[in-house]
Amino acid sequence: MSVPQYGGPRTPEEQARAICLRLLTGMPRTRRQLADALEKRGIPEEVSQAVLSRYEEVGLIDDAAFAGAWVESRHRGRGLARRALAQELRTKGVHATLVQEALEQLDSEQEEETARELVERKLRSTRGLERDKRLRRLAGMLARKGYPEGMALRVVRRALEEEGEDADELGYPGF
Image (cartoon, rainbow, N blue to C red; front, side):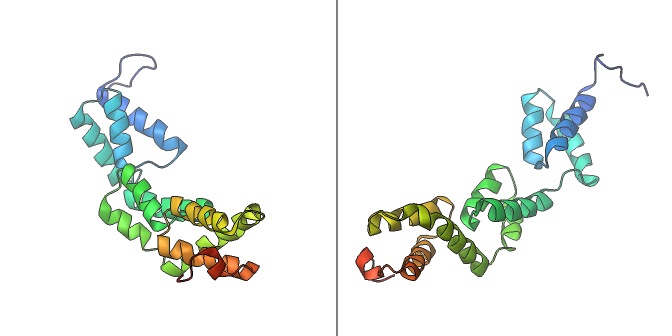
């Protein structure tokens, strides 16, 4: 077995391993992200699959761990709800079963608490606006982060009530 020379021609397998290791050095990646990168660089499919399978065997690629860490990080850091997190993981190629398992670490109470924290942080910047405009902005912010409409309206209504605004004056008496 010959040792590859730096700068010299390398086999597709050596190239694939080098590409994967370089990409994994910066941050964890899903199997599909690595497969896409190898395909983009012209690595043959059979070589790509062999290298990726070996990296899974030794634990360098772990889509379940990636999904769990992604959910934890993006929920805590950006306040994203389950729906938005699921969409992000799907675009990264994480299998639906693994997405569901990762999302199970978030319960409805935790998700609602995060929504309340997001609204509290944004509430001050909406002072001075018309009441209905405040409600739309705050609920819209939560909707963009993937929160269900009912939860978003309930959380915003409660925050505005605590601040002293009457929900009936907001034009949403049933919430």
